[in-house]
Image (tube, rainbow, N blue to C red):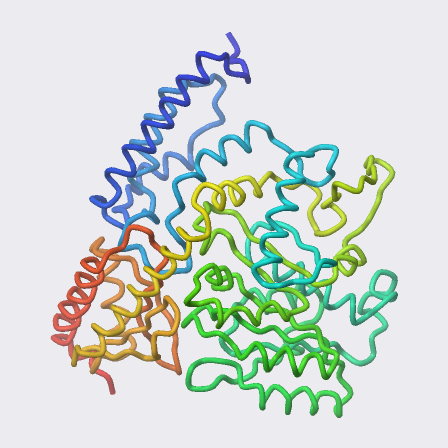
Length: 480
């Protein structure tokens, strides 16, 4: 008998129990697992060679296979020593929100296909507006992540500069090339966006940073004025509310003042850090991001939602529509004062109900719980920085000002430090990232994990020191 594509009520209940049991067991066991798996390559090759099945399998078989094959060959992001990237352990509510969103399968492009989801996305966006004091005429949309949020915003910035010719001529008749400005520490999605949008890397100016890895506004001004004299068209500055390597926050007030004076679009890439504004302690440093023309956020960072959940806020909602509104005859777009057709505000047509997990996350825990979690992670980063500073064998490459820590083993070459990192990961002790700070290779810990403790920090520091001493036995490891 051909397996039906719908589950009956009893099968749904069995699947729900299996899911609940897996989540509970995984939560209890994750700290005892190796953070990076010993990969069973034969098993994964079998997956790649599996023929398209003619018959289906039971839900129990699929769950058992997930436990026996998928979980042991997965990197355990929820492990307390997983600290390489701005990738958090997800909060407790998201797995259930994801399941419910999949069950309803709303297409969040037209409000007629997703009325409740539409209201929820509007409310989530308005909460974010309130956090950053955006004006009432602002708009926004949930995206897959920060890269898509940045791309969405940069397209609006480009089209605002080009005016009516944006749609009809694009860049084809532009004789004075558009130029975009960002810092040397900015996320590579800015470069990628410039390429996709036809700006080109030759027209992206990477402005040097100060000793704290923040964009130098004096050099930005010099570069903008020189480009204008040379016949270019400066159109956009991208500041960072948390640079990807060190978590540095660019001087956002100074950037906003300059962009306002020079009629430049200011986009703030806040995907990494902007939602740390939920913390009273951090808010004064991030509030100036609200002066931007557009601001990217990532709920799948400091709201600890599961992937994917990004967002872009735009000060002028009509600027979003000018770039993205297309009304083909095959779409039934019915205007209603209570709803928005999000297909007119972003590049996607088919859009999943990502707003549910963001909405539930904020309502399940509340701002105060997020503030406490963020403060705790910042305290752990500061503690690791303090540990490193008193260890003569280690060097802190930049002061800890956010939740990222960049450490280097003294007397070891770049290759030696890379070997320490590789062994730390392969041993399953901890998963730290690699970074370049001021030209030096370093190990990077980014505190985004809700399970990490001071004891974990102590253990990681001690293991780095142990591995450094072992690495020093190799003559190739010494710094020249």
